[in-house]
Image 1: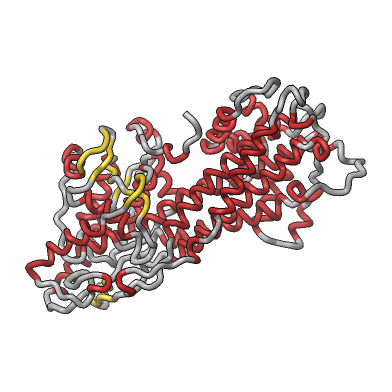
Image 2 (image 1 turned 90 degrees about the vertical axis):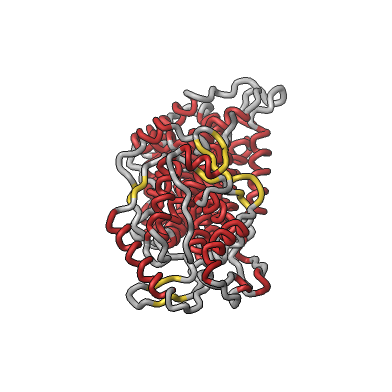
Length: 530
């Protein structure tokens, strides 16, 4: 099987889940973190709701029901939604309204989201409800938690969210299974939602007023994709530095540009962190030592400006992580109920603009890692620039060596250039103009994920070429880089004769995603992860 990141969490075995669960992730609406979201989404870590959170939710629900008994109009509780907000719903139809809202909104299309994304969505929605401002019964959160722990995953189509009024269409497919409808996937395969719940010993919930809108009104789809994307982006920042150091060694460049005094007078945090890592990566390299009396003044930008360029991407990853850290612990429902003031307030916390902008920024920043990598790859293959054999083969002409992987890289970089167009720059009004500005945050997040996957392959190609380049250098590289070369060679043999390279690229891409390359470097030097 080729490198397919979207398949990573489609199947989570019970053994994997048990081994990866040192302790349950507790949801309280306040303390969830991006890494905990990833642990539940990808590694099947168990989830639980503390008793005090359940008690607070029950108290809030009881308080809201007393207020509703007064008969005041409350959006989506006893009124229609969107442009139908002025339509009052008779009391005898309020429960029917809940089911109608879920069914009518569950109209997503396209291929299903990967299981890891759906799991993250479920966790994030449970956490938002647990915060206590949606005034739903704790039974809803308990069902989501039980579905996660029993590995009952609603089948959620990827397309249909405009990112304001939340990810309505996509979240509705999660809610559809909760009421015993729709389709779910579990270890036994896809089946009707009610059957999947029953097989897991769970009961569908009968929704009460306000609960339908609280299940579907929020940013949990875009934020789920975003949490997984920033996790992978941080890994790419790490591996980009390693690939750059390996290329620097193969090209017999100098580490002079990584001197800490340079970053001291331009104190961006990312730049300083990358400069320190680059020094650690090439320390004790015979190639670097050979430059002591070299007349070469400086290298090309893709070697010399690694701290400035990769460091800027690191800053962008940190920024996106901060935005998501706020979002995953926010109340994004509408309306919100403030129990202490006994008031229901309609607002716009469902609007995905903060996440949309952060995801567009993240996608652009990760694209830069790939574009940067491709230029080093090109330099490795051009003998006039590298001093290495043309296309890294001793049999040029008879053999094409690594000529074609650069074509592939150029193609992927070009695709990423299309993908970095900001989704958040667009808006199409919905609901008869009542919802007249939409964030397109899910599109932004999904584009970022796609760019991350593309860039993983780009850096895999650079690593393949850099390892091949080092095979032609008589001096030894640094201990950390040698450990990376040995690791690559344990999976991918040197290219002595032409062969199809797709499997080699996929192999290195998987090694990147699994983190084994960064692990080997971290064990060999003072390397600080993103």
